[in-house]
Image (cartoon, rainbow, N blue to C red):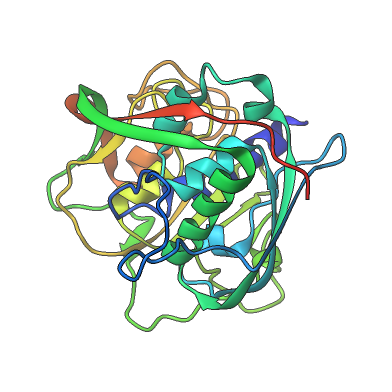
Length: 309
């Protein structure tokens, strides 16, 4: 996998996890017999889980990149099972990294092609419940979490009350393109009118910078969506909000995709183009502060290779 493919894949994974936060995590519950007062957990109409061919790259469906996308019919995703679990349980990158550190290699590296059919149109929360049911049934997943005090990265405004030039409030009723293929990896055509893609989009500029766009997101979720790009410190501590901004925003960011750095401060860089941390500071007007706060600890009690179709 090339450096560009690695960066793009990490961004897709990070956005699928980080850009769809906002509700309390939902740990798995012990199985119970269905009664008149206990509804059966939601489940997919049909499910197929198979190892992907060697060399396959992760594929993130549109509904995981854009929380406003409708979810119905036949859906397919490809990725390691840790990614599926992370989406189902709303794990930040740091939470996922810690939870799967001691799990077998197949959990972290083996690519599975998961195909499922959704009866009717469902919300993303309902689909997450269906995926949790699938994980319990097919991977025998048992999982729990708890919270303790620990180190966090706090997102704060560099200047009180001032946002950067590349972020603006999301307009009510704004339109955007829901064509997932057009929002991933394709630079805009200068001969056609510009199009705003829903959710998460990316492409490489002619100068080799990675251009990322995220629409209709909180500020902290936008930063979380960038946490999987390989910058040490961003992917080892949870990212929490210190801005007190509750609105939804549209943002764009351009940075060098190979800009891993042991620092989380915007130091000078001489390699052409800003690092991710520099871009966040210069283009979004926010910075990260080391702090302490509640840290969610996720524990995988049991997981097995999937049962055959």
